[in-house]
Image 1: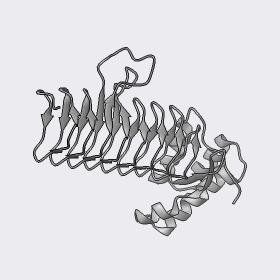
Image 2 (image 1 turned 30 degrees about the vertical axis):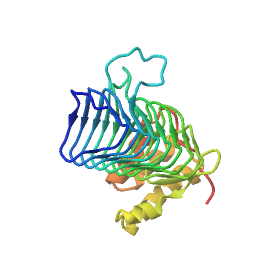
Image 3 (image 1 turned 60 degrees about the vertical axis):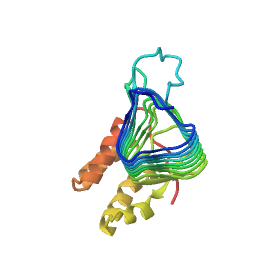
Length: 253
């Protein structure tokens, strides 16, 4: 069933038994499989893939939601695999945002008001509560549970079956229980053309934060005084200073 007021772009494939409600916009060249439900308030970009059984734009699973008008926005070139559910926003943020060039694997749930950046990979069976933020190039492995309001920094990598209850800083590899810093996401950084000099700089910064057992405030001050200003240095400093939940634990080398 396709709502008469739905806006469907050019060359869009829509599979059998799929429902698209009236207040939906779908961009050109998007492919939609069978038994998909795309509900009011959903906006999907161009060149996306939506696989069988996905439910997009469902009402938030939040008792504070009172039926206010909100959106789900999905950027271009995003792949959403089988049985993924993504809820639209609440009055808190007004929208759930999925950026461009993302892969969201089967059976994952993304809650209300989440904001996923660009070029992210969200593994199978990830459970993401409301108002989570994932930075660009974030990689979250399968069966990970993410507490509401958590922030996952750009270029970070989370191991499978993790439990995220603290913020994960940018550029890191996080694993173990409780979730801890386990070094840099070196493979990901090299794939994105980070030079060895920059990778070594990031290692030195995080050694001060996580491995030298310093007070966080003192560690950040030391980094600011001893490392030249750079985009990456300032991203790390700003992320940690703005974290209201606190960041993950350090670990030994």
